Amino acid sequence: MHFSPEKKIAGVLAPLFGLRGESDLGIGDVAVLREFIDWAAEIGFKLVQLLPINEMGHDNSPYNAISAMAIEPTTLHLAPGSPEDLTRDDYDEVLADVDLAKLRHGPVKYAAVKKLKRRLLEKAFVNFWAHASQDRLEKFSRFSERESEWLDQYGVFRALMEWNGDREAWDHWPKEHQSFHAALKWLETLSEGDRLRFEDRDNFFAYMQWIAHEQWSQVKHYAETRGVALMGDIPFGVSFYSADVFSKRGEFVLDWCGGAPPETHFKDDRFTQKWGQNWGIPLFNWEDMGLRNFDWWRQRVRAVAQSFHLFRIDHVLGFYRIYAFPWRPQQNKKFLPLDWNEMLQRTGGRAPHFHPRDDIDPENSKANRAEGEEYLRAVLEEAGDARVIGEDLGTVPDYVRPSLRSLGIAGFKIPQWEFYHGRVVPGSEYERLSVATYATHDHPPLRAMWEEAMIGNGPVAEQARFDLEKIATFAEFKRTSEQIDFERDFYPEVLHALFQSESWIAVVMITDLLARKYRFNIPGTAASSNWTRRMQRSISQLRSSPKERKRMKLIRKLLEASGRT
Image (cartoon, rainbow, N blue to C red; front, side, top):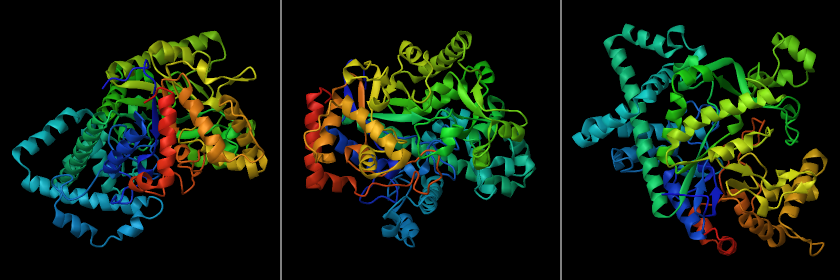
């Protein structure tokens, strides 16, 4: 399936966990994704964009994965016959004590959902070993061999996690468990029974990943049959507590944390405004990675390309330089009230800074650009037919966008941020090699901004009014009366303007498409709603709602008028 920037298309961005099916197990999965693909295709969208699908840790953030390669098991569709090793009897037995109505209601209840899906997969795994055909055993064996570069280390890490109370914090495990090589030595000291039990768990996690790869490859193929491309997401970093850091210690710098510099835009986040965003991700030891031909990055790209036709690299600026913090995010609260000198006293003189170097002079900029392009070329080499998109938002050095264009990587256009020399850039001037959208998963939806601007007070409301004014200018929105209605007046105009832009891909966040105001994530907060919010209605309810059918007819008309269908 070939997607070229010559043909303009439109897409819809939705977090998979937030999608709702009639018979899901409390979270969106690949079966619900099929329904969503059908719905998107009927409207005229040619692309469905998702957040990362990597296996998550205890904070449930898709951007803080415990493996850069492994797929999150809660994304799997588990039902009798799916996978084929799961019987009706086993399914019914596991679900006998589960209150499904309660599980499906409201936000994702991760602890319960993970436990339920794990039990179903364990039943399937037992049946697989007992009854699988030779052909099926060979398929699993071929998968394990093909993916062994990362799968062997991941399996040991996951089995050790279980051994240590299901905690991923490997630096709190016993000494003999704290690195991959130490763990292999420790395994040799176990009794035969314990070693076999450990190997069985290792095999279970490999089986789980095999099923995940099968299901995601199938849904990718299904999207192709509907003429829809799937767009994935590679987070720039990986969790400190990941299988990758656990097994490839030398490829990471563990005493600094990656993030982004101070940013005044996020008015509801004091820490980001003062110090920046501290994501807690280890920095990369690029020199060591280069000696290995960037194998780890190549594996990541191969993994995402198996499930997606295009993928976005979150925080692509990190390839050129990244903002580094000398403390972990857990300490952010302690640093919030401090001034610069007090901070230096706490850190022994180590200050947040751009790593490996800032962009203050032309020499530094030239070196950062050259190194960034070297690393990205390895990504592009491995991507093959999968198109690469770069999330190039934030404090962007002048050389980054020309650099990405020279590599054929599309960057982002957020209309309210495309404001230069006192002028909002019209969509007709956007480069074709770009992705235009009003909101990513981190931004407030248009409707939330609208309501904040109309009735709110303080800096957040001020920012909302400032951004809406720019969006109105971009959309050439003319106030026709005092009584402006968001859905009737503003919504059609701003979506029309987005679709009419010159950008190759125009993406609408699901909340903006449905004119909703809830958010899936609020950056810089540990809000319990982050990464748990689900849509109120299932796909079939959206499809049958007269109000939504009318809305989707309008969207179809706008897409056709802009030549994006």
